Image 1 (cartoon, rainbow, N blue to C red):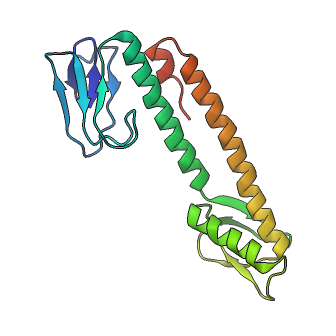
Image 2: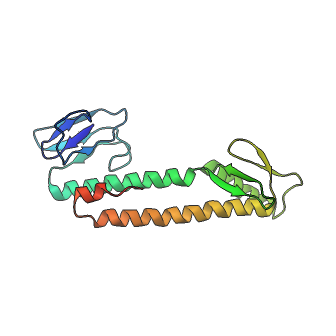
Image 3: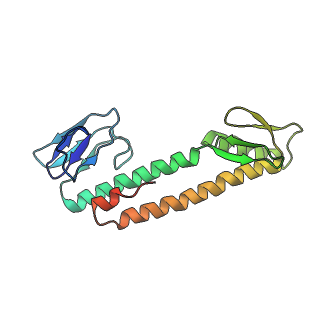
Length: 183
């Protein structure tokens, strides 16, 4: 679904007469409605629109407010991409040369940190860490620290990438320029 502030109308992506100022309304399963009388577009239960909480989002027809809303929307998309990137699996090679892909979601990180902290610097003989495909890979304490460090370093890079993208969005002077910035 697309919304044009110029025409104050909603369009399907298959419509042939979509105005150039139309932007995508990310509403998933949500209902989208438009109040034509006052020039505001309303989206309900749209978790990726402006506030990120699935509540009512008002898209004002005033150009300054409209640009601000579009910037917020794009920053929310950058934030969502950042979270997804942080949770993506990561490839890591142990000191023994075994290369596998490992999960980096929050639950896996919590388990890893509990293991590192709780082990006191020494793992039991035969300790294994599960790869994403559940392959049991022999790990030393240094391997576990190395995997944690690889995840941290990747996340650190993603953080600065996110900050750079959001600063670029905030500096934009037009909707077109905002829409050019993605993860």
